[in-house]
Amino acid sequence: MTSPYSSPGDLPTTVPIFPLRGAILLPRASLTLNVFEPRYLALVDHALANERLIGVVQPSGDTGSAESPEGKSFPVRNIGCVGRITAFNETDDGPEIISLTGISRFALGDEIASDMPFRIFTANFMPYADDFIQDLGEDDVDRVRLLATLRRYLETNGLHADWDRINEAANEQLVNTLSILSPYGSEEKQALLETASLKDRADALVALAEMELAARDDNSETSLQ
Image 1 (tube, one colour):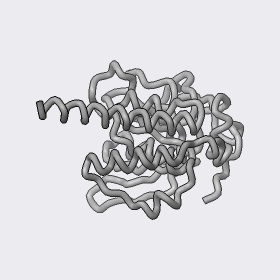
Image 2: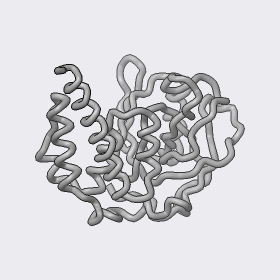
Image 3: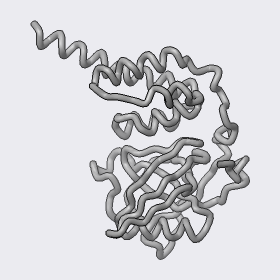
């Protein structure tokens, strides 16, 4: 699907946000959300009635462990990513399943006071103008190392993957999708979101996987002694 957004100026200056710990979105990658809380059902309705845009932002690290804290006063991270609803399914028992396709990261500005049950912030997309350039930095990604590390990680954890689809995926799609689906904590996810380039994000994925594999190997050696 061709995006109607080709530069920061094509996006609005305010976005409604979905604060969700452990979740990130990245340009041209997809994130599926199961929406069931009334405040976020209202957010989806609002987005569908307007430009279909939702900003995915993590709560700050000092807000406890809840996926999405109650209320409208808890602090959120300074950097998020806006996505457009590209698929929508309303289930029989109330929850809605949406797919967001990432457009661009943004720096959060001031919160906009409103009577809505969800939160709205000003958004500055200018620092992330490169996010609008598809495939930027693909040639700099060490794909061989990334795939080798991914294969070892999956095998070690007894997981399987569709290698035909993985091998067909372009580097940008592969790196950003792996970052979104990665099983790491909120701090690691935020670090992946905020990397300066696609290469840096790929290198961070490899480093995180290698650290986990090394820790697993150390524990195995210890248990055998």
